[in-house]
Length: 209
Image: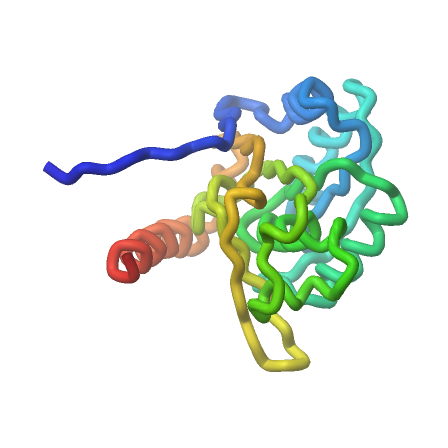
């Protein structure tokens, strides 16, 4: 038998139409102004974004959109999100999508309270413990890397040709909204890719200790 300790501070809301619970959940946690972070169109076409916005509106939670996050999110999007979040004085960041949107949201959450450039965290010049990141939540659209419950975040820097990550319990999402229905329209290839991604991450953690 292998001994282990399970640590899961993320609250999972796993049910049909889970996105409709975002407003009540975030409002109940005291959040009033939320930055929505999502990708390049699928959450709009599927209607998921509309469900989230309707839920937030009903609960009296203001929201502001940061759309167009690409796969393997780039530091420029993070910087833009940080400035936008500061201007709107948001008190939480809600990612809608897969690992890329969630990682971008985490990086924004770290950068908002920091006076310097957010890349300094990824360059290992500043520890995440130096700041108090904004709370993060996630509406998941694809089963894959597990960023909706992890303490890690990976961002690309095209200018430097680098890809780097950070780890901190402070960026672990407070809430993860998971609705199996949203996976029904995934292409078979994407479903298989997500399963492979899970296996790869498990092996990575196992062999890297």
